[in-house]
Length: 123
Image (cartoon, rainbow, N blue to C red; front, side, top):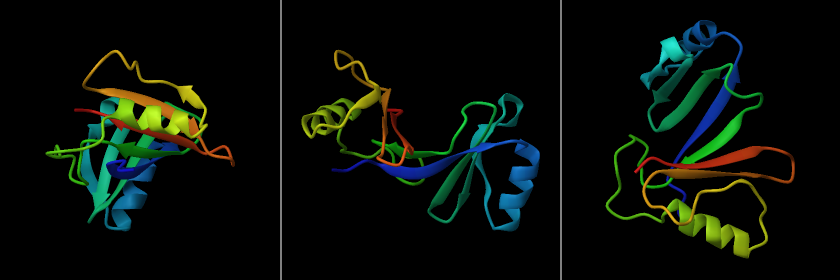
């Protein structure tokens, strides 16, 4: 199962303080909008998202259709196909992608320890 680019989405209390901290670890801003309280930061192939006031807990995020530079892949497994495959294995969806659509969509599942996993396709 190919899930696409991986990042960790962190729920932060102070976007500026978190940005400064991760810059000290060698991360630099890769995308986002500080005015809307979110930034994407990158260090080599490692990506973290900093989100202030958007969700309570940290989230593992996968982006089907993107490589680690957020560039579209020539071929990938569509988010709806991933959703169908996981459902067939008995995994319960917290939110679901509309399987009647195409293009951008997402769904959320939760692992046995309560960690949210967002499968978020942008292409």
